[in-house]
Image: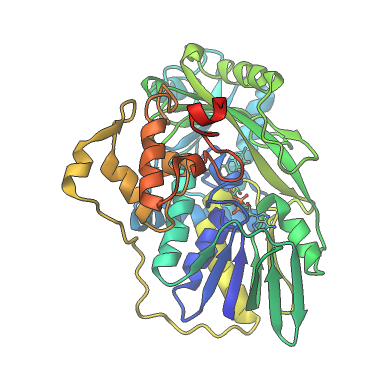
Length: 464
Ligand SMILES: Cc1cc2nc3c(=O)[nH]c(=O)nc-3n(C[C@H](O)[C@H](O)[C@H](O)COP(=O)(O)OP(=O)(O)OC[C@H]3O[C@@H](n4cnc5c(N)ncnc54)[C@H](O)[C@@H]3O)c2cc1C
């Protein structure tokens, strides 16, 4: 039996699990997918928001500003790329400038440091490629960018290094509570724990209801993106937002920490919690929304498109609550959930202490990751030519907690397959290395778990 089970290995579950391993607690992280970071935490803008957007007094405002202040140190400890590039909310009309002044005041109340409203000339001096139609902007120098999936992989990995157990392919389908013990079950396995944290993202309402604590609903809100080649990453240096609406922060144009240019997201409420299709309407909306802000976006350099689902709760704020006996809901964690994740983890731990959990310091806690090192010669053999990724880096991804088990897991951890050819060259080599290292047949290697096998059989056998 564990002291605590965390359901969901996204950035929120990962950060919470890592925080809990600072104490003498046995922690189990449960994830229904084959890998971590398979929900919203892998498909978002990767922006560490400064914290001027959330309503003053809300949990979102409190945890965003705290999380943003913690992010540089957390990313450094975990060896994850983070850049303090600053952000601009650009205005094109008098109404936009009024809204920008409102955001400035809200930001000051939220405790965001060094905010300034800039004139057109100041904006153009900072970002020459912003449209000439700009008339002013809010500058937030504390804003940043981070690699969201690596932050998730690294937080779960560091929790594991400090003793947490990760169970993947474990879809929670029932939760029972008797005599102070939770039984958290998939169709094939049961895990027992004294406390449960529900960090199941867009499914957090379903998990809460399963446990009998379903006081809220979560609507999936689709956000589609286009990612441009690395040669375009210098078009802007700040994250460029338009004035937010009630549906979110609008289409942004931003460099990523890896040097690509990101356009998106759209914002459409849907019903299906698993619908991550990209659409023509979405692409059209991204093109229209981004080109109005920034000139000279080389749309021919798009290398991929993808979709993420925001978990929009029905309270308008993050839902972090002691829902029942020893059960904590961490639901409705939409944007700025990534920015807030380190602070959410501390907040949840404080909440557990208030609920009676004993927190004795783990003197052996190590905040940095244990990284597997392959033989030196393996780092000289290039497997992905677009991103110059070596066999050594792929071996590191397979053998460092939480080890990659499929092609996309390698891609997220190393960038192998993320370049211009999108894996056309390196995928067979990566599949071969995975099969060898995991001791499986090439036929069992998948792109992202489930039935996404790359190969269906040997040519002569299939033809026969
Ligand atoms: C389009 C978009 C843009 C965004 N941009 C930003 C941004 O720029 N900055 C920012 O701060 N935030 C941003 N966010 C918000 C941020 O991505 C999320 O707040 C954050 O990733 C939520 O993390 P999570 O761990 O709660 O959820 P998730 O990452 O979705 O993780 C939940 C996990 O629970 C698992 N799970 C679900 N059901 C079960 C079950 N029954 N059994 C076991 N496991 C289960 C899922 O498989 C998943 O891995 C954005 C979100 C989206 C979608």
